[in-house]
Length: 191
Image (cartoon, rainbow, N blue to C red; front, side, top):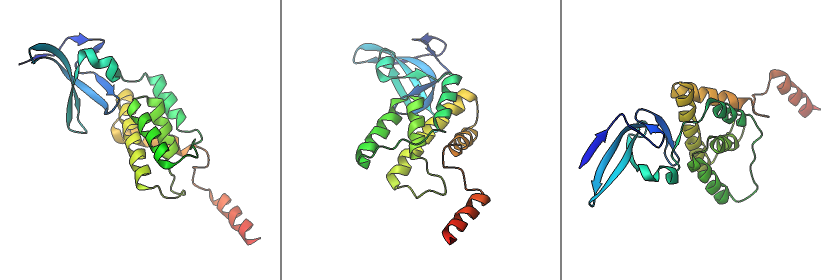
């Protein structure tokens, strides 16, 4: 038996509000339901992830242990975007170990950690091609970050992606070579 409550707020969350669920990204609370399961009454947040066409029900009592949180403040989003312009910090460990670390950062739900993954796995057009697993992790992190930036700054997903890519292009040795730099390189090779 399900009873829908739509206007009440629980633990600081209310219906219609965007939230971040660590392992799925940004979703919107569409209802707060009360369900009777095995004779026990249980209150649940009903969270819709429209892009994934998924609905998640999270028990109100498990919200903090699940890591569900409100959207980041605008200053934290700005800090996350600034993180993208830094130098990539790639450890010299085996790829499988780094991949696990990147996956853990993505699923942490922490915007700064996700921005670090985007920064570290970003490849400019002038850089070598990524492996399939690198590209998958990069796209996953980019998607998570893009959705949160879009929700906080009230942008479309594509506008948020362009903003993130513009920040990535500002990073060290990522900007395309100017014609002058290419001429200097050609002259150096000829000498």
